[in-house]
Length: 259
Image (cartoon, rainbow, N blue to C red; front, side, top):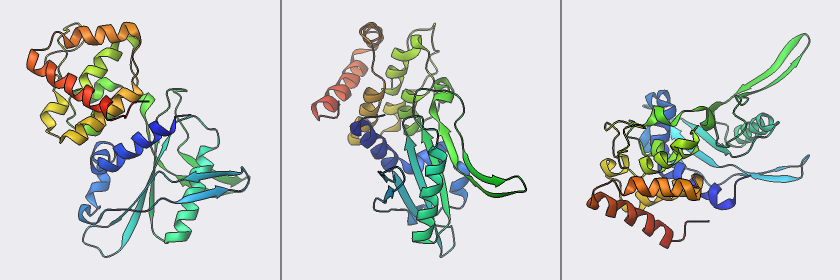
């Protein structure tokens, strides 16, 4: 299970870049979501009496439909470990939120664990031999089934951060870390010069840049050998860009976001 610090970083990332997250993975929602009406609701806490555990909804967003006066909810849950009955828990969240708010709910789960890589369940079904009583479906983003290379040219800050949790070959780990810093790979054996310097070209403010940098550092820990490969790639960058990448890393560590 992820540490509370990791859980906090994930929630902060999604809260800060919520629209960018929807744009990247669920662009169809933007066709009917009124961006000007988005409100992040206070945390919802539920007690599972049968399990004796308390759960807190990760993100709950209320928005109006475009050109309409009525609202709907988007519930985003980050699941950082594999759990056999998680789909049942998602249904319980849905039922309790629906009972409380009496609004349509769009449930989304981000599966951010490394293993297993088999496709996670995306529904909860109650049926009998003669009929199906319930089929509850939720949208999913399973990061360990996505290839980070498919997001290389995407100028979305969420893509820059979440690549650290996607499917990464061992030999690519230093390159992914450098890529999320916003600088191009100079090793032609790995990637071509067309790679965009994402964080640099997005022109994010320093706080958002450090948030993404810190997220990557938390989730993409390099071994000593990988760190040497990472440093060797930094050395190939011109001095101005090298100073910038080091400044981002140093600033993030000084502010205490590391574990």
